[in-house]
Image (cartoon, rainbow, N blue to C red; front, side, top):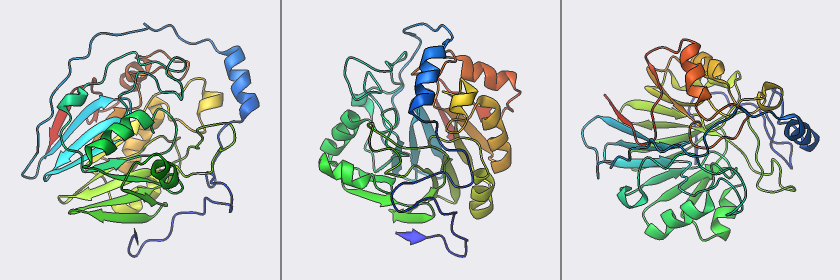
Length: 318
């Protein structure tokens, strides 16, 4: 693991036992969860939307082009210079520890499993069930082609499930792999897979450096000063992958999730040449409707450089 050269360390975010969001609100607690669920008035949404047209990614992408496919939720396939990177892969029916209870997908993945090309690097932003999907990770591990890169503290869990090889990064640490450098960067969020492990592992975003360009994968994050810090350290990214969903009610969600107008501000602070909206359209995790985030993003006046893709859609970037 490497630290970025000539850059100040990101702020302290570990108290010796648990991780925390430095100089920012923390995630709401259990009583707030109860208050939200007891007062929740979710916007009605269809239980299933059959509008996904799956695409088949190329087996490899040469030259200097970047091929980006939105698969679903925060799962994207990034292909460039013969390197294939998959973010927060999720093909399961539910984002849940259970097969019959928990948030169920409203749309199919935009790439069928059998059409997925070789995956060189799997990036995991944190351990929530809609980002660390154990069944999908085990299927990837069984293919035997992928290196898994995770936030601090998560590697032990993956190894206990025979998923690997795995490397973990703290904020500010970097890992080179085949001409690509993966940098771990801050996010404002929290972690937990059960009632007793809250914030025992880290959450993060990633800056992917390859082919004379940078791609920023924000993971799950609230709006905060870290966007300016990331821009200062790495410069303006060629592409930013920014979450826009699971933001209502704001009193509950704002410490951990951006609303669409927050994502527009982040896009502008980062000065990203292109941004793509993620974390929307597949699972209804907040009180807003399944397609409200993309409607609101457009209503707030997102520029033409902030793209909203459907599951299965892709773009080619020079």
